[in-house]
Length: 301
Image 1 (spheres, one colour):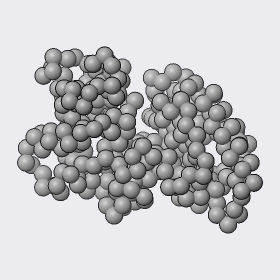
Image 2 (image 1 turned 60 degrees about the vertical axis):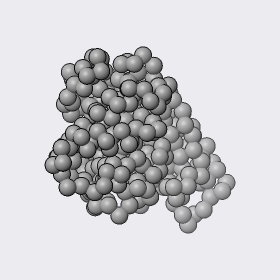
Image 3 (image 1 turned 30 degrees about the horizontal axis):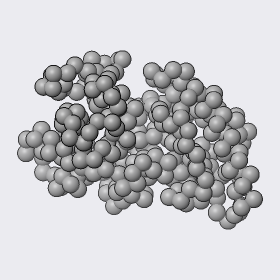
């Protein structure tokens, strides 16, 4: 056993809609052990996570705290009777499933667990270890299987009655200009997630976004939707920085298209930093979520 009793062992889960990432660490930016696997049905997925942490404890000693950053919507208010549960979601089998209870029961340990959204975890990771360091007001939008957002004010994640659901704010229909008509949300006629998340891109063009060439017109349309989302956050909250994370945002050249489209849609109304500073991709790249989940665990101590 490679145990160090002087430094607490942290556990983190980035519980995404497509994949689960589990890790243990003493420093959130340097996982000692990590596992990534597809998100399946709740019971099998949690069983796989529990097995990973049991094996990690055999190697590194007892876990002191855990942070879970989950896909949403989720009940993240610690005093709520349903704390730790996934709420209304089209992801089969997960609606109403209590992730925190399932992990605790599986491990058989009364460890403290911080439960928040995956995008809240990601913005925390960026604030403590990445591109959002030294910024007071930070917005983070993640574009992947769905679209979520997080807001950070002086290092504290902002929660309202529930977490922000930016993915379901109303969007203009930019599809018409491209001769398309795609909205992938089962709940709303035209929302950010339904127009711009990964499944919407695939439905619209017939192949996954990752397989579309860099110069495809799909990215001009995607930039229009992402810019509109950033305009709305600018108007509502006026952050110092907006980070665009998630797998879709990693497309080569997309962030530059978003900046150009943002400038066009903004109409010169706001006095903002240069757009290459105001609109950025995360410096932790695809590790922001798991780093942030480990940082959630660290904050419990």
